[in-house]
Length: 418
Image (tube, rainbow, N blue to C red; front, side, top):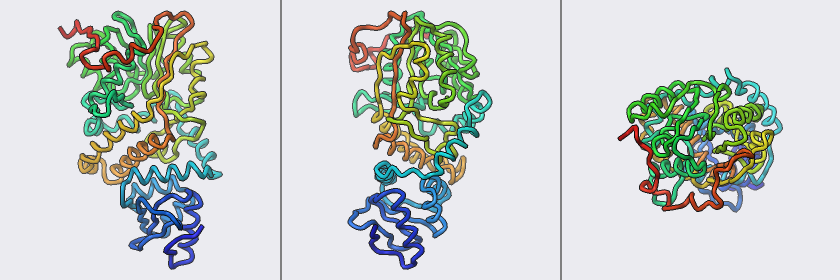
């Protein structure tokens, strides 16, 4: 590969060539220090990556993913230009090369063992991400504190409107009826559980192992007067007991781990049997691939995004029928765009709360996630399923799109509010 504006030092030239061999001919300029930078021949760069020193460049060559993540968070790398666009072209280029480093699988296996989602391991993994403090998440999430993919019924919908639409979308898929019982595994700050009780008249038990989130959800349920209809339980999903009409999990499967899918399936069957129905909403992939090692190291310990076939391991042993599969990939990209925009507007507050390293690491996580969903490296699946004795579903999907899921069209079962 020829490099335009070749480095004056032979060692630097060799390192730059090896870097582009690793990531492919991405349309980017690589600059050392204050130099003009180096670009693959015949390529028009969309951004410039300015690397502080040769040691950082060498780390990028050895491990582009970890090397970039660590150096960017530490301020040893700066990106001049559209950050998300830069990540998009790099992801696309790497995806086209399909040259995994020999040690990436070994490191991932080691991380699987170190971050195994056992009862104790899950508690530690969740604590590192979700117990950072509610005030942090309030800075850039919507008013209801929904930290999962929104659903945009129109391109002009606000984030708040799209998160409400997502919750309605889930409830309509499950065909919830007044008086039914629902169990939610991994409830976040409780928005969906409260929405189901407030607008669909169901009784909800919601499980979560994040102390910060459970504390917030319980207080919020009391404030809006539905604590008699929603019970927030600080416990692991594996300890769920009782019988329910429906099971729902939004954004939790990513934290279960492949080796624990049978445990989750057993919990689902124990709670809804053969007559109930359920919905799994999760980040996935088109095929098996190890999850980002840098994100597992710094942001989401224990995380894994399964291929659709892998997710079926939760359901197949118990003879559950898959009724509907929807991919909301572009909706998640748009959700993340809103989050990143809000994050950037409060970045100085984030830095004051947690430091510059944390601020840069989370910017990379949010921007990288946008790029991953835009380029198709990540998907967002909603899988609706039911037991063999379930008789609750209509013939068509028309009920999902009636009245464009407007706020006015939602049923309201709010006796506790009246």
